[in-house]
Image (cartoon, rainbow, N blue to C red):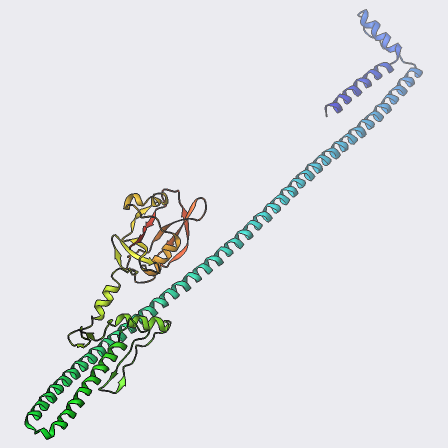
Amino acid sequence: MSSKSDNLKNSGQEHADNTSENIGPSAFDRSQISMNFGQEEEDYPMTEEEFKAMAEAEMKNRAEEGRRLREEMEARKRLEEEQQSLSDTSVKIEEEHRLKKEVEALELRIEEDAKIKEKIEAQEIRLEEEKRLKDEERLREVRRLEEVRAKREIEQKDRKKMAVALKARDEEWRKFKEDTDLREKQETLEHHEIAAQAKEDSNKTVPIKTTNSKRKALILVFMVAIAIVGIWIFSEFNSGATEDTPFYPTNKSTGVDEPAAEIEPGATQKQSISEETNALPENNIGEDSQGGVDTNSSSPSTEEQNSSTSSSDVLVGSSMGDGIIFKTDTSGKSGTMAYARDVEPMTWDNALTINQQLGEGWRLPTMEELREMYATIGPGASNSGQFGDDLYWSNQSYDENQARLVRFSDGDTSFHYNKTAEHRKFNVRAVKDFSQP
């Protein structure tokens, strides 16, 4: 705009110069002379030629001025159009640049959204896989607990049936011994009566009847010999140490053999026979030094034998020192026990050094040991270990910063929390391995 105003000023100056140049020399000279000498300008009449020349010059100057003004207006208009075009072009370029930036930002946002969507989908897939694995693990755990519970119920039923069978066998043995003692007393009494009668007859009869007395004596001796041989054979067949299967004698009161104990489902015949043989005394009927029958001998009771047999064995759920046994090996002499009560909630690092608080040998349990405690002495059974419904630390890490836990309200093993944070404090049930000779 400043260049336009400068052009206009220059044009006006040129117009003034041209106007002054076109004034007739005579008039200019006269006015100049009058100014120089202080004389008033006199009116000199102009000639017609001078007037025409002056009019022509004036018209020419006006035409030139009009042309110049038109050119200036056209130039100004072109300049304004160019400036407007440049302004429109600049605005258009800026608009295109802005739109380009918006498009780039939109493309970047779309790309970021796609990446976020991929991450979300990957995370959903991972969560679904973790959920599936947890469900499978929980299902396996439930099945294992059901199998343990069913096995425990079968064992309890087997023990009850075995106890009933042992009790019935003890009762049959008692009856059999009473019948045997009664028969022995009757036979002894009959023997004395026969001997007394024979002696009395021998004293009263004449020598002619000696043959009959001898015959009766021989018959009596033969009967006694048969009785002794029968008792000896019976004693030999009832010695449990030399026979694979126990021998059940015939009950003379009923005339049938005594029934054997029923073999429980799931147990082999050899195991059943072994248990029955161990429950019986080694010798059913005692023998004296001459091989005769000792009627004063008696077999030990089943309760005494069971107590002597299992005095060194350990059972799940029984107490030992400061702990409760929840796992044993096949020998029944060693296993693992849990501390009798929960230790106050603590961090995982402190739980790893629980032996410093409880003593040597006590340690943090594994996940498998926690599951076994839940299924044997925890809420999964009768909760004889008095566990709470809270989370319990294990000694197994989930990753670099987390450790695994078990919730004893339902046995859920999918929990894992920060093992270094001070505010993460959970229950601890220490365990200890044991072994006895």
